[in-house]
Length: 289
Image 1: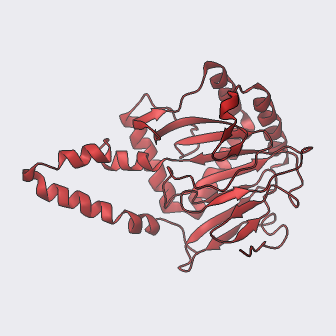
Image 2: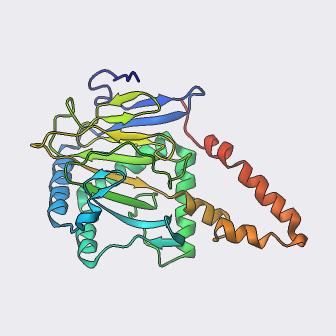
Image 3: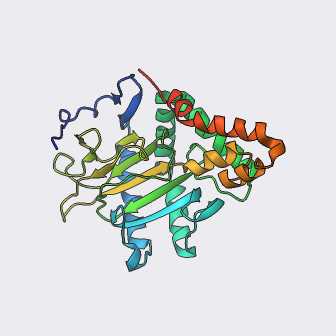
């Protein structure tokens, strides 16, 4: 398989979008703002602090995405959950994560990502925002990650992070995942984002953000040297949250069961018809150029 690497520093001076054949924005290389030096320095400090304090069992240090510490926060569904729930953390890790998430630099980063999302995919951003607001209004026990963000959950990945080839199969397939990388590493020699379906290898400088449809595209990243550090911060929403809200705050199974009565044949047909259009309706929300 022959891979292509775009020119060096292709998106450091300006954002770059990778389009599909119908000019939909498939991947967006957002880079980082010009005035982000202090932000990135603080992000590196706070993520290094989290790495030293997070307690993750040895058996969970190796997982399908790689071998590094990872903890998640926010609302999700799937993977055994039958309804939306808050992702669980130990009391100790909860304190560490809350400290990181309340840091001013993390708030700045989330605001930047939210602005990029709204600018690049305005209709999709509105969909994420509406679903999250509806979900939290109906389930006040669920926790919002950030006041200035629209993703349902986020993951903190630390420990010279290098991911294996994978899809984030629980995320919305026509949606996006925001990936921010940081640390102290030579991005010309390691840390690249590999997009296997597109046969692309993209340099991923510290402090930069890339948005991809992580459920659709198989992706990984190149490792860094033993002397270097690399962390990543991802924001995403589980596809099940969208289905839960669209089904009137119930699962697909519960919605289907409710329409099995012969007297509700028309409602069942309408439900199945709507389901058949989800892919096209999702694509229609993706930003274009």
